[in-house]
Image 1: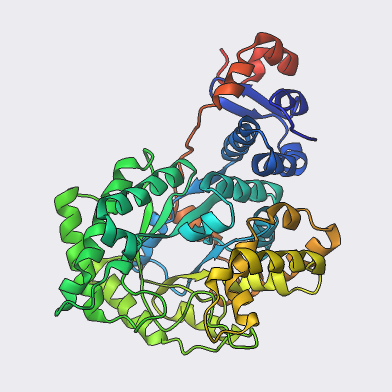
Image 2: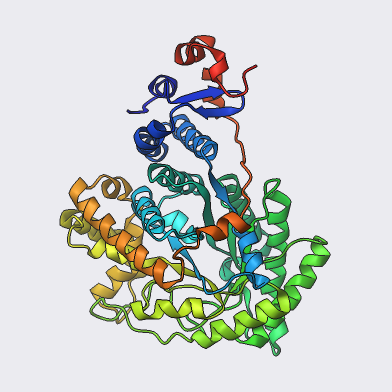
Length: 486
């Protein structure tokens, strides 16, 4: 099954999918999941024609939601945590930089084996750029994976580190904030109903008091939260995260937490009265994104202060009724660290680089492809070389940027190599999920998460094609097969 042009969709999907004014109707769920998800996602990602990519994305979105695979907000679950209705669960938020469809399938398999409920697929503002994955593509790949693995229920997709760059803000505050609003609007349209704002870059330590230091941080976060509330779909309360500590800096304090939240809530109340604020807060505990590479390319061990997560989490829950703290940059921590998160007040942990390392360093990863990626990095990332750093450190810190230019080559690597890498990823996901307390937690979603179906209109060119009675009739034979028909 291939989708090279628009007319391929109604004819190739005949008997499996029906199209009508209200969207799509799945006529054969088993075939749609087993036979259609993969060719549709490849068309959605790699077709040279924009209208084909748009149509494949639309069919996967509508088809997934028709089958109860619904892009959702985790806000209500976190609100329940803020009310102490459950505990001892730390939700993993996984950044997938490579082989997104296959990696997401591995994650769904791991979750199914544990009957795991809450887990998040996320991508950061920076990753959207260097992995060549726009929000619409990322959501579609995750939903396609959910379909292929027989998943049913909510799917949480998150924008990670939607960051206001300090340098850009200093040069032109309005322009920089508007650029983040543009990204938020695109992300919401793509089904990102969970967004982590990062305005902690604006903390000004030159100020004499903590509230003054946090002022720009909470003011801009409140402005962006109000923007999200103005643009979120009807029936959806987007889960919004805030941040008080830049990763790699000093550990966060209760004073900083209170200064941020007191100021944030006051500004939000003035900007948009009665608005719902953040559901969680990211803090600094001693980790660094991607780990700290040593001269030989290995990653340094870090001292993570779980007490910070616990103390700040307790204050955020008892005083502000938000779910708790969030730990960034955790995937390169030693395995024995992960069991501790669920015993603190950490509600969420972000995991990225460790999975990238597992892919690149797997013995089955094609050696020739890695050589091509590294050669590309030597030329295109040369300006990122730092004095005193070894070749191994340079490659470790830049190789994340090789996934975008070589996306096709990684997605289409030899089947046995891909299967071996995905098996290793699945095992890692399963281990981490078990350590984080996700076993037998699917019931939490049924109890706390209500995800409305958000319908989308057909892309303009495909809609025009379906308006042609010859095409519509040739596919379905009778209009009563189509949803929305009289």
